[in-house]
Length: 88
Image (tube, rainbow, N blue to C red; front, side, top):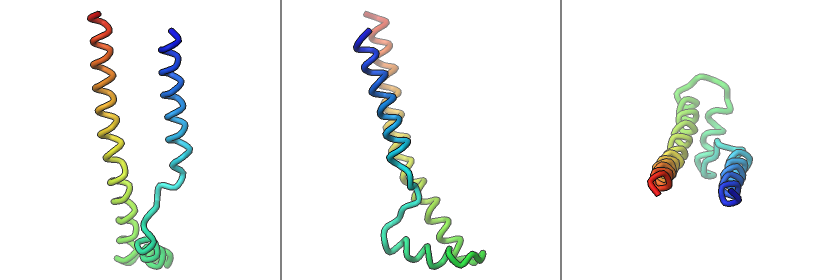
């Protein structure tokens, strides 16, 4: 019972760390950021401003793929352990 409570607490703590540690999701390198700010900051709907918004979307897409992979491996590992516990 105590071990199960410890696992639950660590998962909750990890979730809080992920929620509050990643406050700024739109981050780029210094060069990309300067280019995007100069193009998006004008407020016009030019092809350059669309490049800046596409760059931000691409960065978010690249950022989420490792989380999906790690989450999938974690879920499969959890299901495997649950299956082994039921068999024992």
